[in-house]
Amino acid sequence: MKTIGHLINGAMRTDAERTQDVFNPSTGAAEKQVALASVATVEEAIAAAQAAFPAWRDTPPAKRAQVMYRFKQLLHDNADRICELIGEEHGKIHHDALGELTRGIENVEYACGAPELLKGEHSRNVGPGIDSWSEFQPLGVVAGITPFNFPAMVPLWMYPMAIACGNTFVLKPSERDPTSAMFIAELLHEAGLPAGVLNVVNGDKQAVDTLLTDDRIKAVSFVGSTPIAEYIYGVANANGKRCQALGGAKNHAIVMPDADMDNAVNQLLGAAFGSSGERCMALSVAVAVGDEAAEALVGKLTEAMAPLKVGAFSNSENDFGPVITRAHQDKVNGYISSAEADGATVVVDGRNPQVSGFEDGFYVGATLIDNVKPEMQSYQEEIFGPVLQVMRVNSMEEAMQLINDHEYGNGTCIFTRDGEAARYFSDHIQVGMVGINVPLPVPVSYHSFGGWKRSLFGDLHAYGPDAVRFYTKRKTITQRWPSSGVREGVSFSFPS
Ligand code: NAD
Image (cartoon, rainbow, N blue to C red; front, side, top):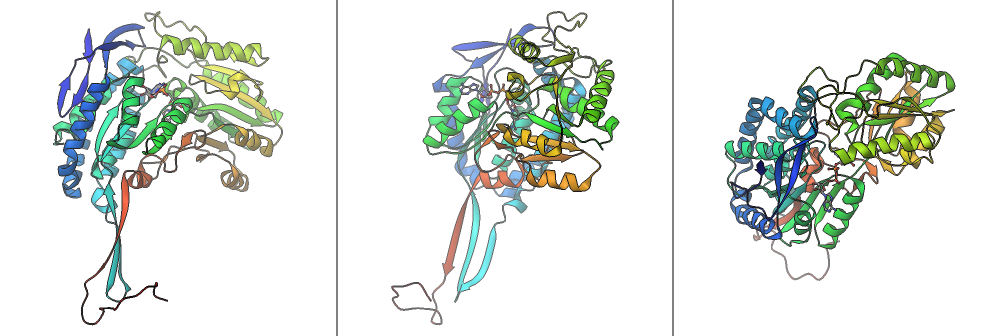
């Protein structure tokens, strides 16, 4: 069985004291193994990044950007292979994997603008003969820890910008689907990245804890579930590191009585069931305002869900694939059962779908649950599966209160034709990314991505302009060249 190892100082390594199976979720079979890095292996990767830093820091930003331009082209050239690797280990259908990769490439494009983004600020004559300017200097060695659900895109949120800013990087991808991240890192080397600037270590908690506590790591970017995000943020901060830790979500869509209901239903289907609901921006709760809207919504959703196809990643006619593991399949099924036991109505039941020829795959079919109430476990927790829950309320205020009371605040959306209602909603909702008739309001690469409340620990969001700030530290320089005109005597106070 093939073992996915580590990429340290430009060389692939497969040595491992411990390994873990990597499954093909479409078939349910363990097809590869991933090496789980020891403390010593992670320390070697950090040392390689540390050694590469001085030269990379001093490489002109325009030269660093040239590597990114070549990298972007290689990502396009190898798109089919990358999508296949994502499919084999994550289960994403080709069209969905290509969408993921495209969003990742957009972040590489943004990183190509590093010379412009790092220009800094300059003021002449802030005092007599005194000039002052601010520069954005790289931090040093930066770490990224990423989740399974976007194995190609989320690493690309992080290291292209970190590296373009002059940092060196250690990436720890998800151990559940590590191959596409490794393949993409190799492409970056093919594009001309010097050895040691990007290192990839595979592993579990042991690798992560080493990154969090090593003094040479200056900053940590994390994306994953909220309990782990909170842990990462706490430990990184306690060890003096800058940290941004993006966590889980429960994204609500409000469906107003005046909404274009057919459009809302189409948008909800893609946003709830695309990628098997394993997206941190998945719309997992539809809040219908008024009984008439609720009846229309549930009726139309039920009808539209009938032809949806769950199946193997290799068949592009499928709408979505399996969930990531057998354990996760059980967990998602468990949430459906708990909602039923708590009194909700399972209108479309996706437990145990028949996928002919792939009976051992980790499939959950599209599921619709009506009459969900705030106190139910299935509402309070993130399900992360193809399950859409419907709640019924009497007013927009009531719908907004539900959203604002929820512990997560990643994304949300309102479906309406009323501009005033939409404006009020976007102004007052306690959520970081808001859609108005846009179900997945994922910011483009030149904005930044991040939720509020327990969906993000830290100040700066991921990618875009916030990434430039996150991966650099500001230095402000004030300069005077004494001359006869401005030479001053001793002064014991600020000028007044
Ligand atoms: P996860 O939290 O289980 O794992 C994320 C990373 O943390 C992995 O690299 C994993 O190896 C590591 N990790 C896991 N347990 C750890 C521990 N105890 N100590 C140290 N490190 C540990 O998340 P996942 O299941 O891979 O991904 C799904 C989650 O990620 C969902 O909650 C989803 O909402 C969230 N997510 C959030 C965003 C966002 O932008 N907010 C984006 C994608 C995914």
